[in-house]
Amino acid sequence: MPKLQSSFFRIDQRGAVVQLAMNRPDRSNAMSPDFWTDLPRLIRELATDSAVRCVVISGEGRNFSGGMDLQAFAGISKLFDSEPGRAAHAMRQTILDLQDAFNAIEQAPFPVICAIHGACIGAGVDLMTACDLRLASKDAFFAVEEIHIGMAADVGTLQRLPKLIAPAVAAELAFTGRRFSAEEAHGFGLVSAVYETPEAVLAAAFELAEAIAKKSPLAIAGIKRNLHYARDHSVADGLDYIATWNGGMLRPADLMSAVQAKMAKQEAEFADLLKPAG
Image (cartoon, rainbow, N blue to C red):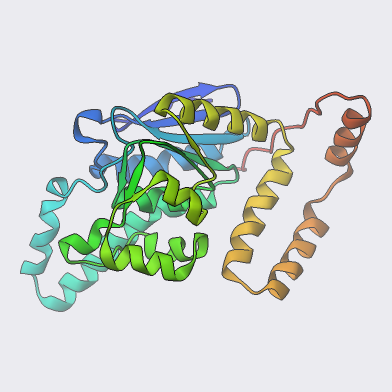
């Protein structure tokens, strides 16, 4: 993997697994402008490295993330000093640019696991809902806090959360902005498991990532793509899509490797995905 640089994230590679740790603990990993540029850039750079098979996103310090750093974005209000139509157009583009940071997670060919502890509020919820898998420590708590500053969440929570939990529950959380615990999140199905400590949830995230990294990366990419497609389409459309996908992508090499390894009671080894051309 080429040397990756970031002013917001600490980057650590463990074999085929890469950790992106938000590294602004003194501000509860509040998402300053460099977060919004670094995250999509790093995810897309990692997607060009065929050796990367899973990513873990975590937060340093006491909290996962306190959400968007509003002080760092105070300049946004100056947009409204302009002519109203042009100000609205510029504001819309700003929101689309912020959304792109989390869209990059969904577009990556590898799964992204979110390891959450402490506070996960506001844009922290936007981030975790964009990830493929979510694990939490017992001390984690969550809130769709945007309602408390007089706005509707606009970078993904309102679109993704109702696809992950019961829509009525998502609506209640968004309308009230109330805090909910890790145990509640587990009961909603928002997180897969709850662990005693932040250290334990991070260890579990790496264990899960390493297990995924041993599978066929082509099959994993296909599963991720089809899960997202099924989320946004009918069952009939999804069945047609997976038939087309496997018709084009399914090849005997990975199947034979898996079958032979199972018969020999060994772990299969799978070739990396090819790097994109260009």
